[in-house]
Every structure is written in C-alpha cells, then in structure tokens.
Image (cartoon, rainbow, N blue to C red):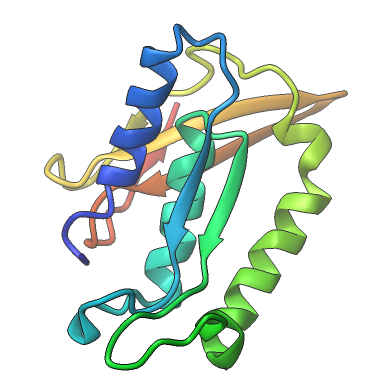
Length: 149
C-alpha cells in the first residue's frame, strides 16, 4: 500500500472524468486492516490520501472503518487511538477550511517543482478574500523539497 497511495488521486480524477466533471465525487479511504493484516495503513498515509483526494477534486470523504481479518470488527477505526486522532484532527481541519475548500479552484494558480522529479508534488490554489491558500501533497512516499511559483 505504501507505494500506491497515488492511486487515490488517480481514482478521483477518473470518477470526475467519467461524470463529465458535472457530478459531485466522494471517495472512500481505508483506515483499518480490511483483509490483509500486513497492509494496515498508517495515519500519515491516510492523511496524505485525504489531501490527494481533496486536491484532485473529491468533495466528500468516507473512512472505511471495518476490519475483516484476522477478526471481524465493525468499528476498528474507533479502536485505533492513533488513527482515530488523525482522522478527527483532519476532519476538524477540513471543517475549519470548508468555505475555502468549497470556493472555486484557481486554475494554473501555482507551479510546483519538486527536488526529486520522480516524486511529484500536486497542488491546488484557492482564494478567499485577500488570502490565497495553496494545498499541496507529495504523491509518493519520499519527501521532496518543492518550490512553488
């Protein structure tokens, strides 16, 4: 999973394309062990997926909270203090930024140059009043040093 987080952004883009960009897109994010115990996402990975989703046009997020293996747990997210704290925190952040996030995106508002071209950084620009917001996320696990123009 740790090398394929960018599939979330790809999926959101595809949903938007298939709907002709006329449909509101929501997507689900895995926040627990679904069926492969060794593939449990980390809070950092899920947080990256949240921002990949939003930057690529998702208008709503669903956190998959169930665990199927090694035992069934219908509220596994609630039983994971670290993941629950991150999900709670990012939900609060999104709520605080809702007016900004729901405003029109400034097309071509920023260009991003990553220090490692193999680790792209995607960004979205919003403006509310006199304040400009740049939301950015690295698309792979590496930590690039991006510059913004």
